Length: 103
Image (tube, rainbow, N blue to C red; front, side, top):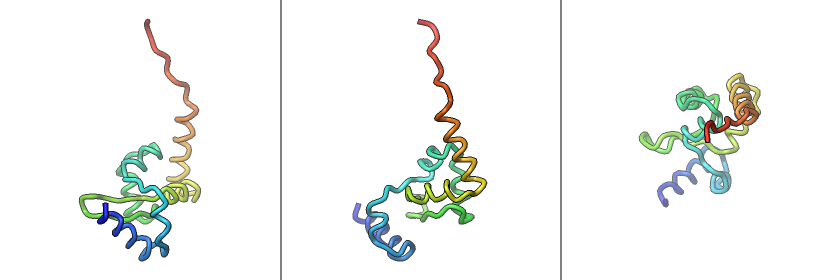
């Protein structure tokens, strides 16, 4: 946990400019972001590599981390990908729940 906090603090000071930001914000893995946005994890990785979504790499094997604020920014930015993700979230929430059969 200490190593994770140190890396997180380094990210905040060097990239975000403030040590408080990520200490208070939840960090998501690529898989968690993909699940929230209802897209494939490789789409999230591509957005991160291309710079369309901001995140940072913890280590080669640990993968990317994205803050909750960045997920919100991405959805609100008006990008084509963000609009599609927002639409799929809305569509999933409005879909009727399937009924159980039998019984």
